[in-house]
Image (cartoon, rainbow, N blue to C red):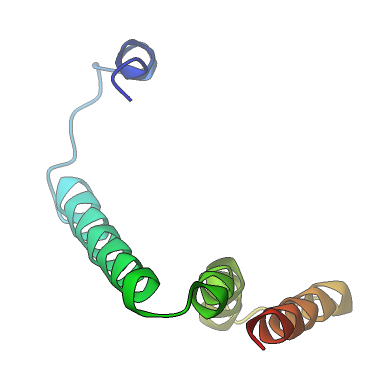
Length: 97
């Protein structure tokens, strides 16, 4: 990450003002705090649980994200996307057995 700092600085537009409101810095801090807590729960579950069950369940995170976004935006997906989500759930179930 330290090696990528010059690239990040090059990509930054310093002419724009920084958004210090809730949708800017504070939102990023909240999201990263939740990310850290999620990782701590993941590390705890790997340490004290069965990895054969925990890892496939963690693989469902993108599927859950897609489902939540479809619900929030009130969008009905096409049959191919629905089939893919169902297959993902079936695969996770079979891998956890």
